Amino acid sequence: MKANRLPVYLLLFLTFTEGSAVMIAELTGARMLAPLYGSTLHVWGAVIGVTLLSLTGGYWLGGVLSRRKRRIDMLCGFLLLAALLIIAMPTLAHWLMLRFEHLAPLPAILIQIGIYMAPALLLLGASPPLIIAVLAERPEEAGRMAGTVFAVSTIGGVLATFIGGFWLLPELGLTRTAALAGLALGFAPLAILLMRRRWMALAVPALAGLLLWPSAPAPMKPGASIVYQSEGLLGQIKVIDVPARTPPGAAPRTDRILFVNRMAQTWMDRDSGTSMWGYVNYLRAIGSLLPEGSRVLMLGLGGGIVARDMQQLGHVVDSVELDARIVDVAQQHFGLRPNGETRVDDGRHYLRSTERRYDLIILDVYQAEIPPGHMLTVEAFTDMQRALKPGGFFVINYPGFLTGSIGFGGRSIYRTLLEAGYQVRLLPTGRDESSGNNLYIAATQALDFSRPRVPLRRFDGVPLALETLFLDPETIDLNAAMVLRDNRPMLEKVSLEAAANWREGYSRHFTRPFLELGIPLFE
Image: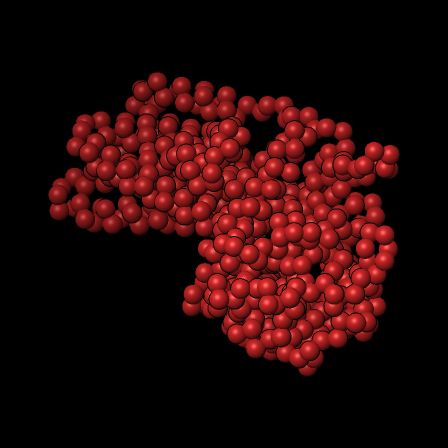
């Protein structure tokens, strides 16, 4: 059966590739923002909003143009131009992000995706009405054809989400995924236009060739190298070796840093394996309160430095990590040698399903700067209690903010722990709120902190008594806090100010300097 000189199956194939391209553009567009802006509610809210707005405009435009002649030419032209714009997205995104980083995050995000993502989505959105107009030769066929077109488009989007998110992005990276999606989208429209003798269409593959022409990568400065990198639905992961900034006269040092969405998750001296994070020393002292042979659960593995320290204390350490790539990175690039079970799972699910009981659970879970809201509720803390042995306790590693609006999330965690029936001790690890973390130590009975096997020490080697370092609970304003519950997942929202503060600091200290070292935002 022909439809305006095109077979129905070919029009439905165009519909399928259009739906696939929409989802690839949305996924890659959001992931391109992650190295500079993370994956917060602001980012995903802006991406989803701009996607829907662009598609809405496209549907309207396609509906208006569907009454005109030469609908096939318009349809193929729109798809071909959209393919070119998708191929250009990584180049545009990289260029734009370095020029709008001085703006507040939300307007910067909206401006950038409005430039590098919205035009392609607008053209893709205009395509289904044109296809429906071509297929529906009689008015009574319009409803059936519209249902068929949108069903096929949606199937394409579903398959692209799974294939793109779980295979293309992790294996090929953002740039090559966008290029592959653009080429797949543009092939059939280009062939149709050339068969119809629309020779101007040849300009598009020429421009695509220029965009895809491999350029020489920026040379990296001596001592800097990318050890590992991967893109995926759970974020961008990079392991980078960089020359450390050492005081004059000090021996040169190379640091190895694990980044998730350009936020450092693990930072160590590459040669000695010593962590550069201060809170790790506090956790080591806390873990040494337990006798050798104790069972420890790590919820969130990162580079495995804390897990390794617990092993060195003589403990058996089980680890739960949501991202399988992190497990591989910890073992291959940070020297972790598991002595317990390592599970790729959600921490909350593991707590509910495991029969094993632990002396200590360490909750150190982040998706870059985003707190795991479902792990920090009254109900989650109840699950935690079921997984503890009698006399066991758990520790939460969280940003150091406690006062003002920026500390609302931190105060709410404290109040939620009290609501769940725990005795809570709060241990700050930085000189001030912005320079360190807070460790929430929660137990159902009083703990003795007086005899750690590995005492915490000052820089001059003098041991510090943990009991003298805890924050006075009277200084925490719990009236200006909330109890976090599963049916009110508010933590990410109330932590946006703290997350933005962390992201701004990391961008200032890592992202821009690393670009100068020749380490790109994304591959």
